[in-house]
Length: 379
Length: 199
Ligand SMILES: Nc1ncnc2c1ncn2[C@@H]1O[C@H](COP(=O)(O)OP(=O)(O)OP(=O)(O)O)[C@@H](O)[C@H]1O
Ligand SMILES: [Mg+2]
Ligand SMILES: [Zn+2]
Image 1 (cartoon, rainbow over the protein chains, first blue to last red):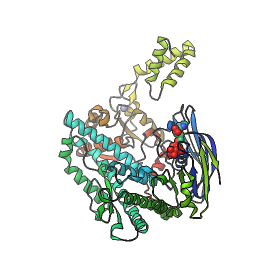
Image 2: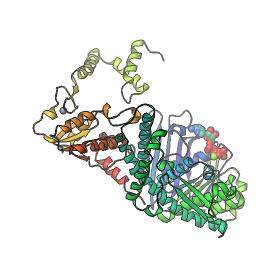
Image 3: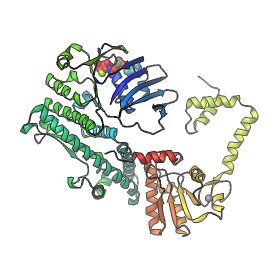
Image 4: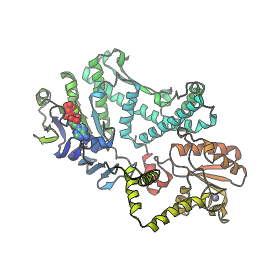
C-alpha cells in the first residue's frame, strides 16, 4: 500500500498544500515546529480515518479557520482509492468519502495496513499495563472492526457493572440478578477480546523473536519473547476454544463476587490484562539495558510490518522523530526493516546526520523540505 | 449579545429540546418572532393540545389519546404475541414493515445503572405482571441493539423464565451501537458484516 498524493486545506499549520509521494523512502526534513509531525498526522488520518494525537477534530483545523479538508489517493489492493475527509466547526460533523461514497455515521474506514512508530512507543516496556493495553487495542483495533466493537461494548458493560457495585457498596444492596446482564456481556465480549489479544501477541511474538535474533545474533541472552498475562487466568491449551474461555471467565468472575462487592469495583476481566517482554527468559522491564529494550520494541514494530506484508499487503511505515532518539546501531536496525514496507516516511531536523545511514544504502529516496507550513519537494 | 427578557426566555425554552444548541435555539427564536401571529398561536396551541390529550395506554404504555391505544383494541391482532420496545416511537418503525401482527409493550427506557435506571424506573414490573396474567405465550425483545438494550432484554428473559413464557431476541444479531430507529436494512447487514472476524 502507498499514498500517491495528498492535498491539505486548513489542516494544522498547512493553509493550502499539495504533495505527491512515491513508494519507497521519503524523508521529511525541517527545523522544529515547522509541520513535519502535522504532515505525518495527515497521512495517517487519510489512511485510517483518525488522528494519532488529536483529542478533538477541531484541534486539527488551522487556527481561526472554519474547517479542514484532506484529500488524497491511496494505492491499496491494486486499486487507486480516492479518500476525502473534512470537518466543519459549525456542523460539528466529520464527513468522510471513499471513492466518492459518503461513509454513514458510525461506519468504519476499511482497514489499511499502516504502522506508526513514535518515541512514545520506545518506552512501552517501562510504562504501565494501561499503556500496553492501549497499544494492543490500537493495533488490533486497526485490523478488525469486530475487535473495536467488542471493546467498545465491553467497556460500556464494565462501566455499568462498576456503577452497580458502587451503588451496592455505598447506597443500598443490589439484587444479584441485576449484575447478570452486565456480567454476561463482559464475558461474551471479554472472551473474544482475550482470544484476539492472545492470537496477535503470539503471531507478533514469533516474528519479533526472529527479528531480535537477527539483529543481535543467536545466543542465550538474545531470545525475545512476548508473554501475555490475561486478567483472567486461561490455560493456553484452551485458547482456541471460545466456549471454554467463556466458561473459565464466568467461573472466575463468579468467584470474585464477594471481593468485588467489598471493593466496590470490578476486579476480574480483560481490563486487567498485560503483556511482558522477556529477554533470555528474564523480564526486560527489570533487567534489560536501555538499548536492549529499544531493540525489543524495534523488533515488535518490525513484526507488525511483517505480519501485514505476509497476510495482507506491504504496509506504509511512518516513523516520527525516531532517528534522533536512536543510536547508530539501532538506526541501522530500523533501516534494515524498510524493505518489508512499501512506503516509508521519516522525519528529521538535520539532513546531514541522516546522510551516513541512508546514502550508504545507495537506495533512491525522496526529500521533502518543510518550512512554516509550506512543503517543498527537493527530489 | 444581550436579548430582551422575552427573547431570552424563548431561547432557553427551545434549548431544552434535544439536539438544539445555543446557535440553533437563537435561530429558531428569531424565526418564531418573524412568523405571523396566527401561525405562532397555532404552533403554541398544537404543543399544548398534544401534551394535554396524549397519555400512555394503560395496557402497553404506547402513546394514545384514549385509555387503551388502537393497537391494543384491535381484535385482529395476535393477542398471545408481545413485542417489547424501549420507546413508543419504536412501534412505528416496526409497524412500517407491516410484518408484525402481535401486540406491543413500551418500557420507556433501558436499564442503565450509570443513569440510575433500574427495573423500577422502567415498566418492567408492569410487564412481568402482564406476563403473569397468562395470555401472552411469546415475547419478542426489540430493545435497542446496544449494551443497555441487550442487558434489558436479557434481564427480562431471565425474569420471565419461571413464568414459562418463550422470550426471543429480535433477529438482527448484535448490530454496532445505535438506536432501533436507525436499524434499517443497511445498518443491519453492515453490522453483521462487521461481525465477520478478520483473522
Ligand atoms: N490547529 C493548528 N493550527 C495551526 N498551527 C498548529 C495547529 N496545531 C499545531 N500547530 C502548530 O504547528 C507547528 C508544527 O507542529 P509539528 O508538530 O508538525 O512540528 P514538527 O515539525 O514535527 O517539529 P518537531 O521537530 O519539534 O517535532 C507547531 O508550532 C504547532 O504550534
Ligand atoms: Mg514532530
Ligand atoms: Zn396499548
